[in-house]
Image 1: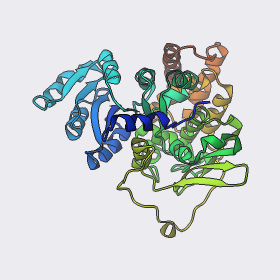
Image 2: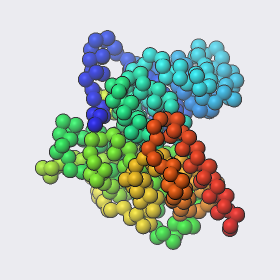
Image 3: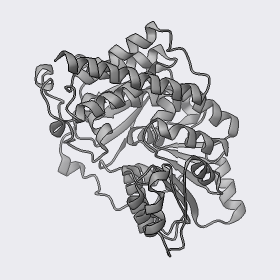
Image 4: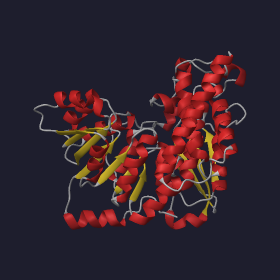
Length: 411
């Protein structure tokens, strides 16, 4: 298995070139991860140099960010908003580009760290290209591991790239996971807040609105991940990611619902020790850990005050009330292309729920129906390339849209 966060090559590079600043390229710069990253860079301007910022089509957001961070290059993946980007950055001394080739060129530029934070399957190819360079990657894109984990980790091994997990739960486990003692680990535990419906009955959840589902009790995140947290699909996706990131068997991965979101991940060892990483629920902490690794850097987040918090509670998740979690874990065990198809179906179903086309519990129903169809068609065998993953992703999306249309017409 790959040792996530191997530090020797990075440390040697720092010693050999006397480098004081870290050069950074950000894929998915205008998303929630990019915004938290920008705050850290602005507070530590002497530590970081922004080589390139890449966004999908948010020209205004990208231009504003490029100016704030004094980026050398700003790239839009979609070319239809390029004129606006050029206009907003005119006279700022920031290079601009657009299109898939421009994204590839941005990834290929000399840099120390690539932050892979493009949301969705669109992040697969750029992040794979970054891995090919053998650089350090701070990974925040779920699809790389959920949809193409075997391919992705094989590429990491081939190129000697260094992989640091940004997601709060995986970063927490990374901080307390002793690679040299991997054979002494009994269990890896990811925590889940339980979302806004942790104590709701299944009958009540059938009637929830998008507004209710978007009110996460602890975290400020994007729309899809917030809905996935409410359904607990997100925790299932994270378990799939962990199965690729850490050298443990799937049976050693566990979930605890922890509504205070103070403990983000735990590792249990054979001697009975249970190591936990704790902190306030703020994404700047795991991002900063990746930026400064193997060192630490100051972060202006609220300190976790255990006396003020008073009580920490834990409970087992309920797969009956949260069927999306069971679907995700079943897809992990099935392997092959099941997780990729599930992820694509979930993305479309969540969007349909947000647009009031289906109910909250119908999200998991849609995913199950699409997986059953694709399995019956023999389409869930292991993908051999990123292109295969992307083709299956599109097929699963189309089947989900068909299911939603049929559901709407029958109501």
